[in-house]
Length: 249
Image 1: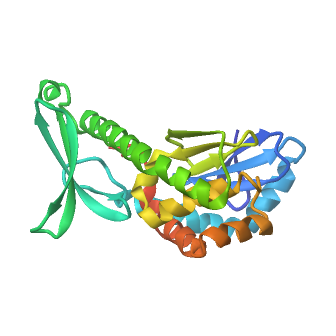
Image 2: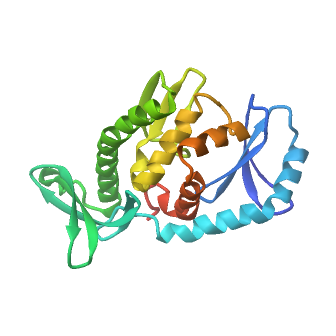
Image 3: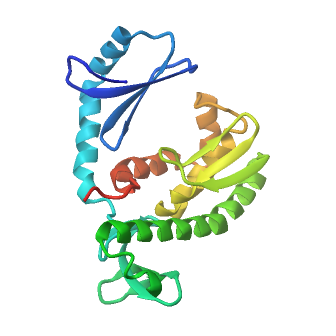
């Protein structure tokens, strides 16, 4: 249910058995995650107190729409922490290739789509969807080749061993750990610098010992990744450019 409070901030309330109240701004929309026991008046007061922060986040994400990749020829996206240029061509063999462009001193990610589908992808909406799908497949392949060995390496370093590891796409998180010791990682991590990916892996491994964000948890993270604050800062600074969605034409 959407509500407009006296601060004129529209938000959506998602209730569950959780014990705490939290705010999230996703694609310019405010989401309040609340326990069943908290009433609407308390939520409105909470929104009022956080209105300045919420308005700043909404403005930041609104301004970022032009920066986010629109999956068209010549657009840019992050790959391993660097902006690469998208090149789209059609050929018999479908593939994705990363190469250096010496003229522009920038890397180019070439998306080769099937020649037989060229007529089907007759408008930019369908073309963007096809390009996005192929990039996601590329990211997942890269993630399986990069993240899984890192988990093994850092598992040995930390003496923390997960029961299973999954690679998939999430909308709002880079990784997760549950009380069964299962780790999951977002293959969109391939947009982040390698060092920041290392931080995320260690972060989730440390949750095997502390399934929270307590002081003890962060001390454990710092033990194995002393520069974790800088890694978190990179994600925060570039967050708006890491949004992953099709543009609204």
